Length: 316
Image (tube, rainbow, N blue to C red):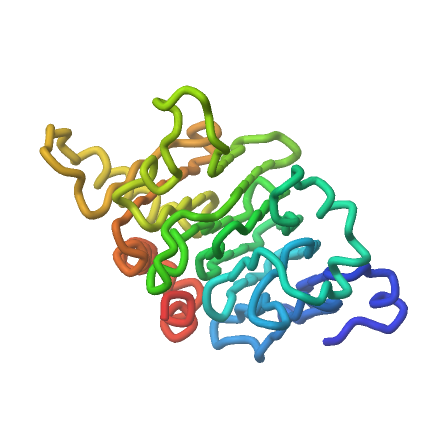
């Protein structure tokens, strides 16, 4: 349901709002608004009463200087799945500066001299009692010299469910780009009933020349041989089965010295107290498809909560 013109007028360029409500046992989108370059699309509810929203941008990606600010409210006893269509592409710059860059130039000015204008994506989520948020976008792909910052904050009730996927690829390998971005900064902060239980931060930078030759390793050299890194945060009653399965699998892994890195590596860390039962999973793969296949197989138990056909959309 589109937001009113009054609501839209209060949103700055690149801003958006989604509110999923419940009335009479049925979920409905009570607020749904966005301004250029952010674009939101939502098909009808699935058979499993899951609201699906695609978070997109006009022009096929984000430009240096763009600022996206999205506020999402998942009200009690509802389920929301957020997807994207293809990877989130981050460009260094474009010849003509667009509206979001002009009106939000305060964020772009955070770049240091000589760097590309920074792109910022800030998302705030509130997930109420017995509600569930499934954030399963395609990975971020930063083009050559792009600078990108993403800050995602999740406020959830004790009995809410969170499935958060955040991942990045090395770039356009077909064009010879392999970790040639300028800067990538990602923060995922989870607060349960107002208490922080997790804050995961990833910072990748291609540093400038250093007089000490030992420090002059490119980002590609540091991250080799992996081309994709993913972080998954799972927490809440709907993913207890998945957490148990992952914990059992991880406990059975044998540590062995190898001559060469494996094609895919993963680790698992607990978050919060035992009663909260949450985990952070980190995955690294030599190819993006390897990571995607691992995620698809590992999170397959989500099908019972969002539906088989809907789940397939997340990992097409």
